[in-house]
Image 1 (cartoon, rainbow, N blue to C red):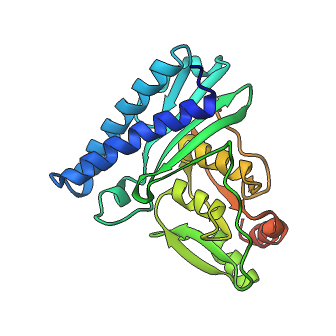
Image 2 (cartoon, rainbow, N blue to C red):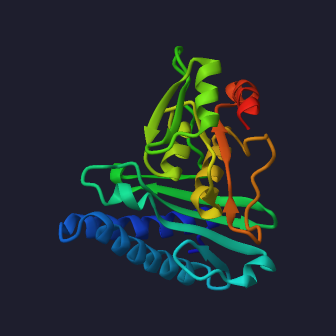
Image 3 (cartoon, one colour):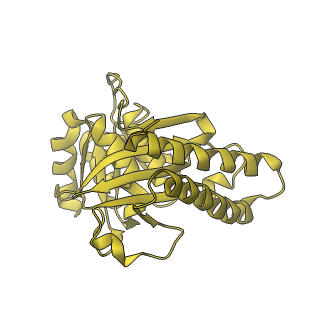
Length: 247
């Protein structure tokens, strides 16, 4: 049976989720040691799955040496085997994720984000259905340890509430799940931190861009991606306008 690219992404994300939950469930490791072991185990699971389903494709992963062939390739899987290593290492936390995205011909074309702590896998097709926004204050996801000045500017202008959450991927898909209305980030990330969740967010109809409103670019030679905004489309103009003075 032929499996499409979304199915490939889902299968790889599920493989990583399964090994991460099994490793965590043993209770033999905690903290940084658990995170390191989880990174390695999830990378092996994803690579094995992608190699079996799409042996000719390139894999661009946080947990592997950058393969320069990706810059000439037509199909590149952008992977973060364990996004939120710290949260994964903390007992009881669910705000960590597994990212598997396919970049093809300049676009993110398929993706899966597993939320193993919730038993969920979000995919680009069928895309998550964006919940109707509840009237009231705007909620903006930010880093647990270092909320950016740009998010504080948004909070001041929109009378928004800043909501600390875990991994970058979780914060992005939290917008698609309706937990928050936006995610505003500066201070740096890598392409694998956002590729799959941004693909999910776009499929759900959310606005995704840089702080200055310019497009997010993936499979770029430099893996660094300094900032991003993910938000409900009806809030995009107000959020981006609020960011400009802080940029």
